[in-house]
Length: 225
View 1 (cartoon, one colour):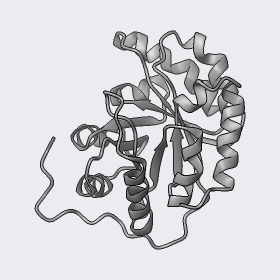
View 2 (view 1 turned 135 degrees about the vertical axis):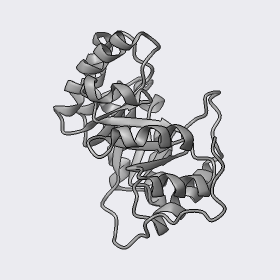
View 3 (view 1 turned 90 degrees about the vertical axis):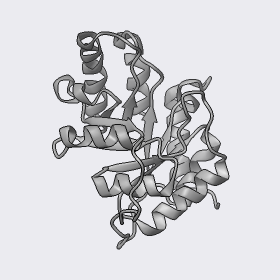
């Protein structure tokens, strides 16, 4: 990863009150899209969802492109955005609304090919300097708290601190990743513009629609940090 500059860039300062937080769903790795279609449709139809981050199982470029089309149609029909996890080069021809890049280096390499037509989000930001650099480089949002490749993530208190710091100072939207439904309200209260949630939705024994509805309710009545 490229080293941050000696003088960290200044991300745009916060000047106005933020709108109410919204949900950002993160899918499990998707193979055959038709097998996931009904589950996805139920989830995005259960409440207001701002965006869906589509994670894809490995496959050839043509197969990956085809896998995006059905989920994109389902998600976009509700007014939400379909964002690819990586695969920025596929966003345009697959019908996706943009891509989420992990790490400042990957984001910087892809952002010019995505913007201004498509969303360019950035996660995997391990320092405040990296987050500010992503904002300065044109990120449409920064994400905090998502798991690493090995499943580990920062302590929840550290995630709350980073979200609160960003929300207090900067205009670029912040996505906070919630590992469970219990974290959703706390992240919203900390100042997240969007709360991302994945396994807590798809693994819920009640089904994804009930889980999304509960997550949405927690956004409207966030808990105190």
